[in-house]
Length: 334
Picture 1 (cartoon, rainbow, N blue to C red):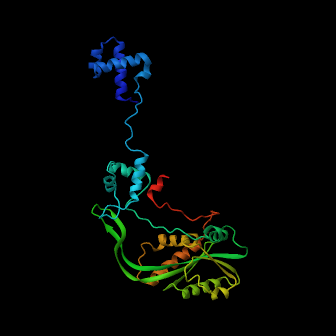
Picture 2 (cartoon, helix red, strand yellow):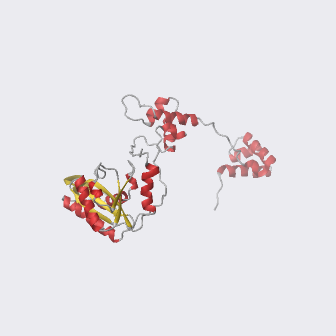
Picture 3 (cartoon, helix red, strand yellow):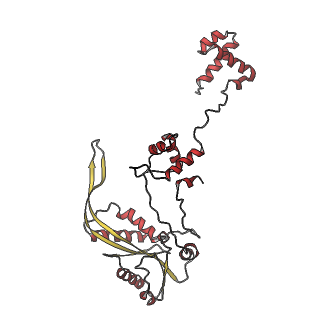
């Protein structure tokens, strides 16, 4: 059963009662309107029929805040907060502006997805050879690798902690159960993980070391080269000093190995970083290890399980560019 708004029913009854010959005063009492309103609606019906009983579009009040106010709010964020405060809040912004309510301040912040208490970090590459040489070299290895050669992404994940956590089930007062671990833990040391991923297959080879030095890096690379005897290797690395000494005698002794360095502050171009992220989410986060050996074993178990169904990451971007940030909030309006 369909229903109509009360005001529409009220106006329709008014017209029907008028058609029956009822006086305006009596109609007003019946539909609970003033006599003047009854006269008004009868006139509008006589002029425009059913369309006359509809509400006329209204302009509403003029907007109190415009684009100029929005620019003032964003510009205020670029100034230091009041003395005694380390960051702006919506209330402080409204007080500083004087004629803008805190509700309007938060509307503008939400529109631009600005979170005053949230802090994020980033690393933007300023390498002048980012696009012209280094990034193009890495992308070319992904999109069109050399024939009869193997492309490998190599990197390290240092300071992986072996934390012994109290885990189990917690019974809540409402009868429900919650599985998790206590925030208290016991440290059992750290380990450094070296990983090499075949770009074409997604297979990963790992090595565990106590430290991250040139010595450990060369030991790991010797193991990788031994697994690909006689093969031409193209190795993607970041610009860490243990990868890039001034005089690389090891590289000169291995003419079949070619190093390709990512641009400065652009290690995200190295695909093994994606594998490290998966390792953290699926194996290391929340891991309880009674020793460094247990942590290493957990990493090895994950690597072996994932290698059984290894698949390469699909790189589709043919050209990559360094990011450019806007340094002030007021630039968001431009």
